[in-house]
Each structure stands twice: as C-alpha cells, then as structure tokens.
Image 1 (cartoon, one colour):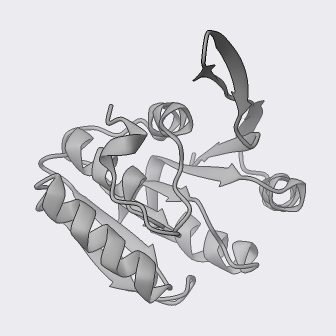
Image 2 (image 1 turned 180 degrees about the horizontal axis):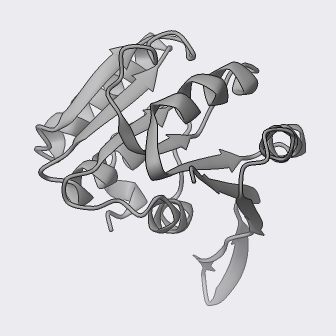
Length: 186
C-alpha cells in the first residue's frame, strides 16, 4: 500500500491509507477486475486498484478539473497504464462503462440514488459496491437504498487516530470517521 505522503495532493480531498486498505479489501479486486472509482479525487483509490488489477481496468470518474489534473499526475507518477480518467459528474459518464467487478464511491455530489441505479445494472453477479461515506446522510441514504432494493449489504464505521510526534511526546491526530458500506450483487 502506498503511503499518503507519496501522492500528489494539492487542495483535493484524498482517502487516507488506512481507509483505502479497508475499502480495497471490501471491493475484492482481482488481477483482471474492471473497477469504477466514482468521485476519484486525487486518484489514490484508482491507482491502488489499478495496481491490484494489472490485467484489468480502472475508470476514475471525477467532475472537478483540478482533481482531474491531480489524478493524471498521480497516474504518471505511479506508472499505472490501466486507469482511464473520465471527466463527468456522476451519474453522467457511467452509462458507457463496461460490466464491472467493483465500484467504489468516494463522492456522489448528492446524486447517490441515481449513481447506484446505474452502477447496480453495470455490476456482474458477485460484483461489489463500496461506499465511503463521511457524512451520516450519505451513510443513511446508502442503507436506505440497499434496503429498499432488497440488496444484501454490510456497514461499519472506522475511526483512525495516528500518532503525531510533538517534541518529546506523541499526540493523537484524529482523522474524520468514515462509514464503509458494502453491497454485493446476487
């Protein structure tokens, strides 16, 4: 797994390493997986997914131009040639995706239900959707969607606290808690 400090960041939000590890484990990416990363931000998940799927492809969907530039720079830095960047505000840009093994949602711009409607049709049987929700509203909307559509899901919240050295002491540096919601197409 890549250290956070290795990514080119700018002012674009990035999924932290510990959350990336859990997210990618829940996505169950194989060497030939087809993966969509919705709200790709810096591309940290896209790049690590591409490394897990060297024979597959990762579609990084992002709407912000500064983030698109960062994804491209990070793709070049980590020499992953199986990432395709799609500039679109999801659900736009999803309809032309191929059949997917996994879809990871890091940002939905308030359009989560429409995004899930399209992604679920794109998923192979056994394919997984993983949602990283930093707001309780997104977590609740995810659960409500999966319940309403009778889709098997699980969810947990993770709170990461890192140690930060301050002179002779170590201080807690608390990162934002994240709900990780996972659903599988059966």
